Length: 358
Image 1 (cartoon, rainbow, N blue to C red):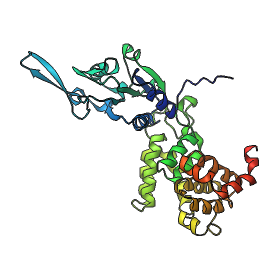
Image 2 (cartoon, one colour; image 1 turned 30 degrees about the horizontal axis):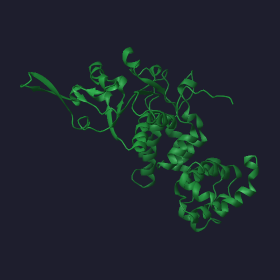
Image 3 (cartoon, rainbow, N blue to C red; image 1 turned 180 degrees about the vertical axis):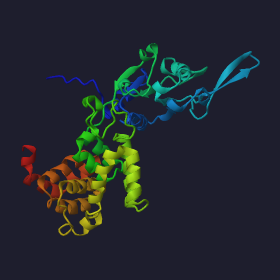
């Protein structure tokens, strides 16, 4: 059997690796901005049931950690940590030092004992089963990341890659991302391209050190854009407001193209219309609009009755869109359970077995 070697980790890989360490080592996650490094911490906290201590080191100073208090009896000082961090509680913590490599040198020095065993902050011992993670960007991004060599040598470095389009769509469909945004990512996989794979900076959507674009498409900015899109569809903001805020999230090139997907989404049948009249609901004509319809179904099909209506409607779309839904749905645990036991899905599989080489 051929062994595949990967030097970059996905977000799920990082959760598995770090949660399995039991706190024996300290990990430094580095990756492009907005790639989702901090979401790894939430995944680990949920998995292990640990209290998450999130420290935004790039905007902190020493006073945020705590203060030195005189002990007149012993003629010395004692460190009183900020109660917010919970270092004084004798419990395992998941400590995330976000943007550690952008922290001032004196703050990095103060936090250094937290990175090594036995862990401590000042004269306060930290529970030995605590897990500690630092994060930072790639040096080639030129955004001011720095770490002393003796510190780097004590950390296990994990390079977090950008999620692939289907990976992000899977996450987005489970976390409330608007279907128009999901469809845009599905239709434009270059949105998830790394600048490392674009040496000449030809991709107009993503950030590149050569261009220095602050407003660009990242997993994080796409989630922000989705919030604005939902606000528009809930009539909280106007189309003009939406365009302004999208440009402030994902840049000019991205906002102009995403708006075209939003225009299409406004013309599509609602979930209620599909459920009530699957045979008569409007079927979109353009491939992007069909993609939006499929992405939408991933977010609202949550029962056997809804799946039955949806499959009736889905069969009116081209075969490639039908396969798109099935492939994405099988990655959603609860939806997959409903789908695999539904007679409509069984009938669909018999008719379309050739799509999967059966």
